Image 1 (cartoon, rainbow, N blue to C red):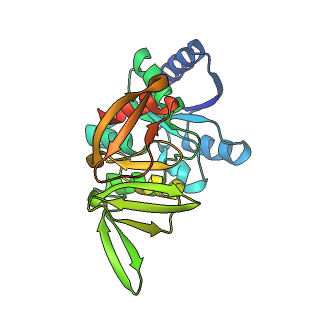
Image 2 (spheres, rainbow, N blue to C red; image 1 turned 90 degrees about the vertical axis):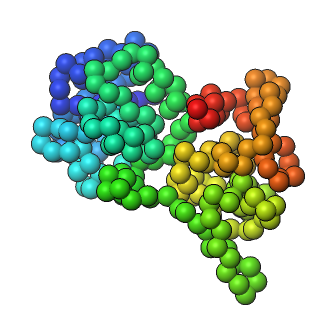
Length: 247
């Protein structure tokens, strides 16, 4: 795994490097400024993971995103205020408060391994929306039903599921509707506090869970309210992330 560190405080950067090396992770490069970050991303392939400080010597690291497209998941390493920390936690792998604690770093790396396949991305517009106090996530979906349009609030959705190359949403009223989005496109549109991608076929709503049952091979069987479709199994690779989400 190739990791990029963006940190202008040399002692903090060296500590991160040592902790990552201890975890057997190769540090591709350590950058110290916004300008250096912009140039590096223009000339190099995307790393698997970025450890990113917010306040750099020549500005905020968000300025890097304004100049280049970055798709890598991010762990924030910051001394930012509490509101911002909570906001970033919704969109990134995790945040680490300086000075970096070794156990917290290990937990963040484990979360990255469990939950990120490269499809989850931190997006600049989402970060800006959170900092401005607005909500970047969808509150409702508009569904075509014959000649009519039906509005469904996300809180009334039990799950989204894929079947026969199509995607459906299932409501608490035991109704299902065909939608245009794939699960991959839906994932970043949904609030991760409420919705979780259990496997390749299901995204579920926390409010829609009726029961969780221990299943074979250290997996879980999830039963949803008013859902009589196929069994929903949490894959073994996602069990830890699922349990973290439930907390």
